Image (cartoon, rainbow, N blue to C red; front, side, top):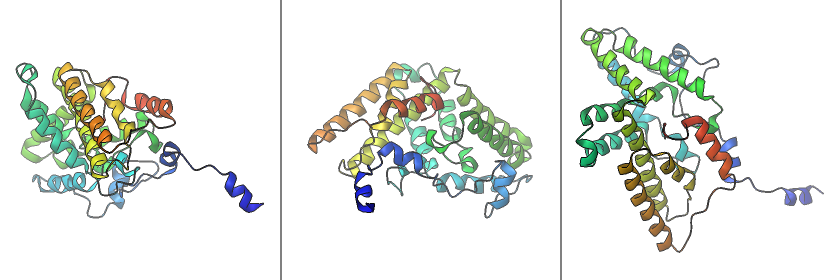
Length: 269
């Protein structure tokens, strides 16, 4: 009877496996969550209140350590860090098409790209399946940016550096300016690039179709063109391997979660 019961059990789908996996960040996860509670249990936590930026520089190491969480759910355990993601985004902004660079403040976009995920050094890269509501995620990131701008950088250069850093982060979060909308699109372009690169590196044994949907949330026509070029490249990659990517079984459920968490048009990727 026991063996027969085992045969009747169906294997978990990719989505169900993702739902049951724990967040893989090594950051402390206090409950209730607060910046001070995280710092209390974080080894070698940076010290606030200095007039030197050195402690802030140490904090930036967190962005090199913390991984982008979505990939790890597909077995990519040594994937890109948060800093890796922001670095390539900053490079992409520098190569904006002339139709955009002629009307956007590109240095401001580059700055925004380098700062937009800075709070994740304490918060971690939270995704829709981690069980943290969007409002709570936003609260954690906002209080972390307050700690960075007022605690770590509040006395550095008269506090101006911290104020400028938080202003860039807030501009991205509010997504009202053309520059911020462009950087949101760049966020998604970088994700699509990484998706194809991981599939290629694994000879299409990993199907990351879940992430291809961000292309539908792009705003600027120029970025839509780039996305289509990347997706065409992906199609050719799968054809070369004589395979075809498939949509996850729970496609509508996953898309609904992403829309709720990131917004149906723009938003983090």
